[in-house]
Length: 86
Image (cartoon, rainbow, N blue to C red; front, side, top):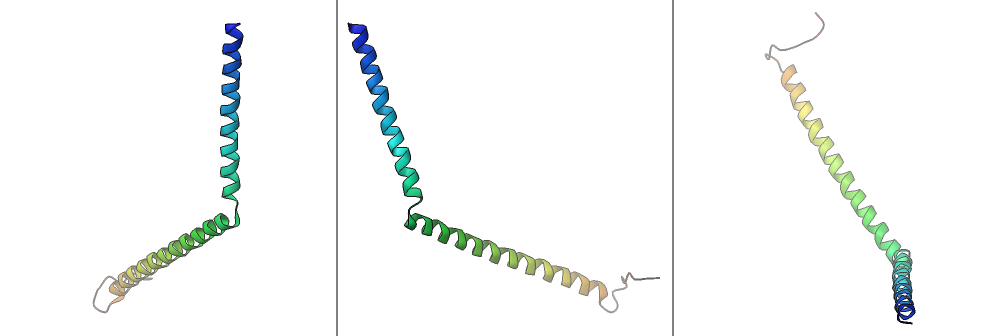
């Protein structure tokens, strides 16, 4: 009789624990797709995209300015480093 009680209690504990775990998992999934959460995630994504885009443009402009300065110094009168068709 003691064995049956032990295994019954073990089964009940496992069942209740599994049910609680599943309930929490479902609640988290439902909360993830509420309109407020979706809107917040979208807003964060757009802000991140805007920041990344600004950084890319800034980096491109810096590279462009550096290359332009390099070309201007190569083509400056009297630099003597003109490399063109011979």
